Amino acid sequence: MKLKKGDHVVVVSGKDKGKTGTIHQVIPAENMVVVEGVALKKRHMRGTQGNIGQIVESPRAINASNVMLLDPESKKGTRVGRKMEDGKTVRIAKKSGKTLA
Image 1 (cartoon, rainbow, N blue to C red):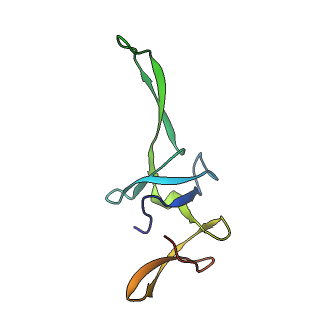
Image 2: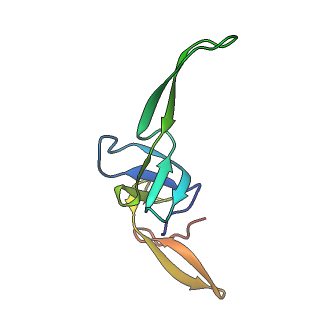
Image 3: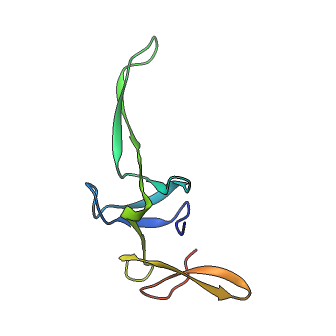
């Protein structure tokens, strides 16, 4: 999987198309990612003694094929490539050729 935790991505399909966010968790076995602020689910929490009831929103996992990495130069979606630099493999943005963190 070419995506990592902390990457800035844009959603390219689904109900949240066009939204951007940071990857919070990567699940490579299922090819899923959790992006902050995208695909939110609501859970109703019952009030207990000392706490009040509330509605809590948390992000759901979405398929990694529905997100693209943000190009650091143009701030648009780009594919990820790999290149050898100084004996190490680094990730590069296909659109601009810039190295990714």
